[in-house]
Length: 359
Image 1 (cartoon, rainbow, N blue to C red):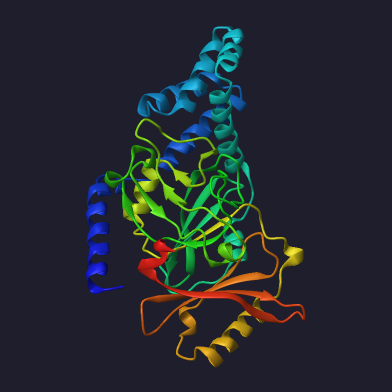
Image 2 (cartoon, helix red, strand yellow):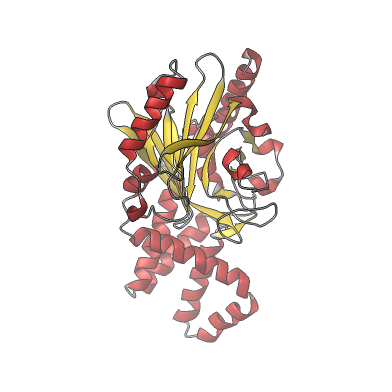
């Protein structure tokens, strides 16, 4: 990366942060709004219908574009008036739209009531993190994006999580146009402000390096997989509504773009199911093997700068990255067991960080 390109990237991020800072300095409005929605759904479950109605009315007034809040309010008003036929009529006239909104409510409700230990899930996929400031984990099963930040004394700590939308056809992208979100470990390769994009992408986007070298070696095609916002006339999209991208509410996207200061090359781990514990290889033995390989082949590499990820949905596959001490290149290795049970480097490459987006 040249001095000019580094300066340009820094200026771009600084300018975008300045534009968004006014909205980002307050308490996390996105999570507060979601909690209010959950409170309303809890009131419905407890048959406190007037309290629920008040909650959904307040949400609709504060966020006029939030269609789910308006639907729930309308349902409660119809029920209060004894007009259950109207509720059914709305569903018959707008089956797809209503189904998407109900899907969102169910996903958010399930997330608020689950008992998954997200930090454990993070540790299942991130065996060793280097000196990067952040790691992003996207759990498509939960429609959730988690932001982790390095704490000098405690390692990577979860600092935020947001509801997200994935591809219309679900996960497991294989080819161009299949409307699926890829599963794997990727890196942020650019920052695109909303002013440079069509309204579809909202306040901005963070493109990923899909397809990576492992995807390509397995014949996967496609491009343009981003983390991005929503159109200006939309509060949030349904759980499955994108063309393959991971989509956030614009306020959440603003925080990724500005307050959290997510840099280029930040790892983004996209998973759709937990690790099968019965198939887990010995991570400590693998780390020893990787460290020994580096000592023999790349002795100048500092072990503290090496990252190791368990690759999602692949048995005994691990993704290793480390920087080249003499350049701005990032090395990528995919380690897998051979027929004899030994760990080998199956695929590898090296890219300049600022050129990952061009691959």
